[in-house]
Length: 229
Image 1 (cartoon, rainbow, N blue to C red):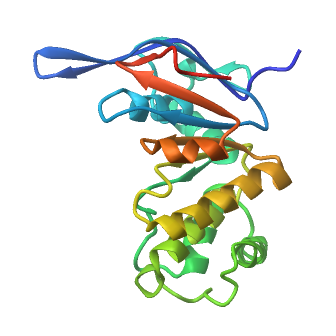
Image 2 (cartoon, rainbow, N blue to C red):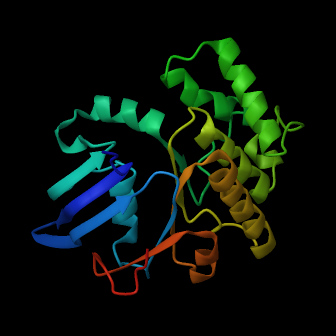
């Protein structure tokens, strides 16, 4: 029997703010199947960012379970979870999150260091990935020397370095102009169709739903009836 790559089972997330409790997720159940392109959408404050943290195994639920390849992460230590997350999930962020003092090459090789990959292999893989995102001539450039679209492509290459099963993209076009945003989305779609990567995208932009196989809508911390498979 095959398991979903990521399975949220009746997940609640309740934050304490001073003396008050704020419920961000209310019994959210969501399966991410291998090889799918899933778009999680919803307005500001809907709970989609919290859902992203759960899907990316960046946070643990207050109630419910999160299964990563069929294994319950809620009982794992943070160090063990970080190691597994580093191999299974690649992250792409709206703000790129590149280290400004490092070159494109150095930004990409950094995650591989934490996985114990030898230096020669790190350099070889980083060069290959920069070629893949059409930045083979920008190895030594720092983020301030790159356009927004180029920085996001470096971030995509960095997300791919450990060959993760899942790419989690958080508002991947949020800081890009519309033309560059479409180029980035077309590249993500190419990763999905040609490399069989599972893509989970969190966005407030409904126009991006055309790139996805499945669109999930979240409102008040729950799936809405608009969600479709």
